Length: 388
Image 1 (tube, one colour):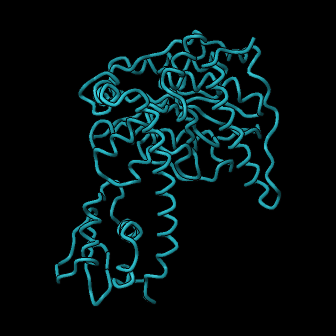
Image 2 (cartoon, helix red, strand yellow; image 1 turned 60 degrees about the horizontal axis):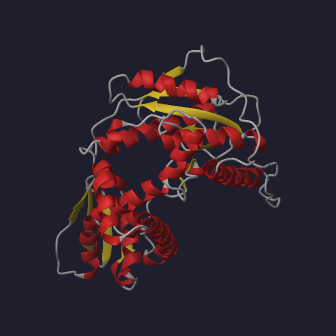
């Protein structure tokens, strides 16, 4: 008898991601040889992986400075790598149902494909007893057979609000852990429900098609972050934990109306489903993928068009920019502003629209001030974007 359908679904999702990762690593290691799929996957039946070392081993807690880790090529030697040549894949685990289901699937599938599996839990320090809870997650991951496993304590700042600050701290910790352990990738437990929420948040910001594209299945420097569950709903992950008797922790912040995503999850989406019927989550997730495809195509067009709208000195020529479709032109302007020093996270659609008017609605207006002390102004038929 095979595993429960929910367990089979999460394992299949993880197996596919590991196959993709191994194929990429093989192709990168032998660039002149044809890529071949890694074999070795067997059926989902069978016993769970052997348990890890005794839980009496104290969990590792690593405090870090909240800064992004340096980018590195997937599969390349990194600090902290062992003599084991098998690639290491980490799972980011909060102890919630989504990430515990992901950890269990990784523990089951990784050994069959010749992959080492480890885990990282991030202690944000935002709730009393968060350090003890992180230690519990470490023990649970070890019991699944993951190694290495550690808890990483971070200090959450204030930039961008509590949710954004916690996210920045978390990804900085994951970046550092990936470098420290020499891992090829980190798996994240975002589900289709999370994707739908992300699309709605992007729609509310009015930031354009890229915001509507939600979370990518592969993201980060050199594709270091992988999201196997974007096609699975939250209930599948929770069911998988229940039938495997995996203990899960429900973060009270996820039900706290003080947080925008929490209000959207418990009030906004249910209201949409009541008004529009079931299937809203699936439709939003589908919208994300379609939007991502379109945004990727436009980004490619903009990259290819940019050299043709610059003069010999590298300045942007207004007449040539004017001839481009607005979606392509604004991408070129955004890229130019970021290259001049404007922070991408602070550069909004309204900023680019103001710069665009120097091209399409020129009436002799003055310079446009952008985030990061960057200034855009029109001079002699050229658009100059530089530090002010």
